[in-house]
Length: 170
Image (cartoon, rainbow, N blue to C red):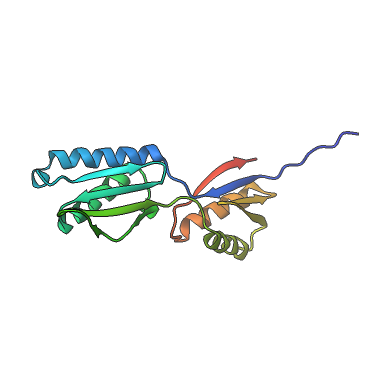
C-alpha cells in the first residue's frame, strides 16, 4: 500500500519590489537632473540606500524637491514600479541652503494589512483557505479556478500596498 501525498493548489500573496528597477529609476532621474538647464548649479541629487531600503533626495529649494519627486514617480512608473511602495517623509532643512527628503521603500505585508486581506478572502465565500506566514499570505484551495478568482478579486480591490501573486503550485 502506497500513500499518495495529495497537494492542493496554492499561491502566495506578497508585497515586494525589484531593487534593480528602483536603482534604474534613481539613476535615470540623476541623469535627467544633470541634463536639465533649470537644475544647473543646484547640487541636486538622489541617493539610493539598498541596505536600509530608502532614497535620499537633496536639493536647494522646495520647488526643485517637488520636481525631483515628480521625476522619480514618472521614472518608476516607466520601470513598472508601483508608486505605493514610496513613503515620502517630511522635507528637512539641512546645512546651508539644502533641503533633504527621505523616501522609504515599503516592502512586505504588515500584520494589520494581512488581517484585512485574510478577512477579504474569507468574505469572498469561495472554498479557499488562507493563512498568514510572516510578511506573506498563503492561499490554498481544491480547485485552481477558485485561486484564480481570488487573484482577480484581490487585483480589483483597492489596497494601499502593491500585491504580487507568486509560487502558484498546481
